[in-house]
Image (cartoon, rainbow, N blue to C red; front, side, top):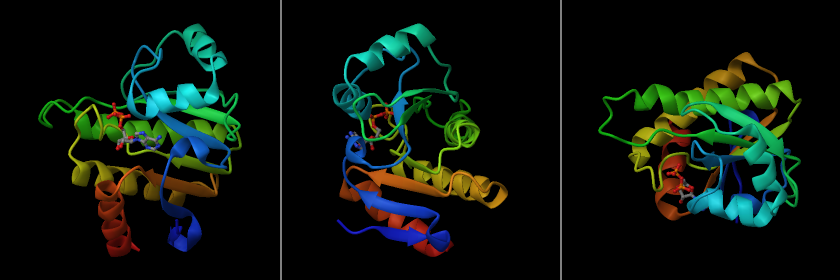
Length: 177
Ligand code: ADP
């Protein structure tokens, strides 16, 4: 699968399974218990192995819009950044700010750990029901703003699991850059 580059290569778009990414950190769309779940969370826990659950249990939980970091264990990635996206409840319950916060806090943690490359899934757009267009807009704008103001991370990957989100990201990134 081809990689599309934007913002002088600092933003990269890819369709595939995030657990296979060879980056410094992959972001997990976790739930607030951090104890695993379905979707990308389940896939990351399966691929990273049981030590991840142990590590998450010690952290004890994560608020919506916040992010925590663990080792990557059996993943190729050195770290996993777990962030908790908002559940879509119609858009009037702070969802946009909380979703933007997920991307910002994840990038702040990445910068603190000298992480050069980080891969995001499309947070909240699965079981949490966030409308895909709106979620992509927030993801792209928040990442772009962070990268303009920070030299680390060098590369941010948007990893889309299917055509629907991939096409939305491609269109929005092309329009912006
Ligand atoms: P949320 O609860 O935040 O909505 P989900 O895991 O249900 O989390 O979905 C978030 C996004 O992750 C969805 O767009 C889904 O298609 C995608 N996804 C699911 N599995 C994977 C995977 N292995 N790699 C990358 N993205 C994935």
